[in-house]
Length: 341
View: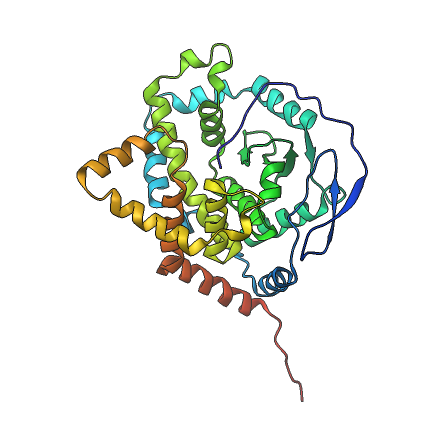
């Protein structure tokens, strides 16, 4: 997910007591009037689906990042490493001062999730980290009307994920966990400094004095190309946790054109058909040129292209092998009954 990074100080309203709110065809939920940080209400059917999913979810106990890394991610990471001095420049720009700014920015303007603070979100994070066989980072929830989530990781500091309140309201529990898994994928793949560097560049870091003049346009394009490839990898991490491609595709669809009032009318199959029509429309030389011009300056691939990519990977042998191997490993670790005469 693209990152939003701002040095602006935000004054939060005074907290208020949660009040019960009831939606049609849904159970009671608690909502904070001040922050409105809630998970979408669940119908009886969605609760049953969630229970079945949790009971049958596969845990990837020995998962390696290269097991699901997208080929374009591998290719563009190698290209980044060939740029002289880029790694040193990144570390210099993301030094102790920047670390402190980012840390204080989140502590001062967001809510740190824990077992005692937004426990439902905390549980989703712990479960996702367990499935991907990685350590759970800190998780913050931040008041923001733009649906978004991002990861910041700098060497020497514990990484953290930030989720915007509007994204929490837009997505179901399973979709939100897929988003958290996507962000965990960045950490699992050790995107680290490059991810933070690219996030800051693509979201207005040129406003920081002195930074804009240090980064050439070609460097920005290279980082955006790498970030687009890294996003494809992390969509795969989301699928490994969701274990249902429609959950991941639904997230992309809602980010493309969803809102809470229309979410129950969105159709994943129709969105996939839309992705196929985009491929067809851009298959001729003119369409190919326009498509490349559209995506060249983007930090993320177009949602329809990401949907098509994850749909194809979910049908491929690589994903099926990972599931099969994880199931076999899980079965081998189960205690077996022994009979002694």
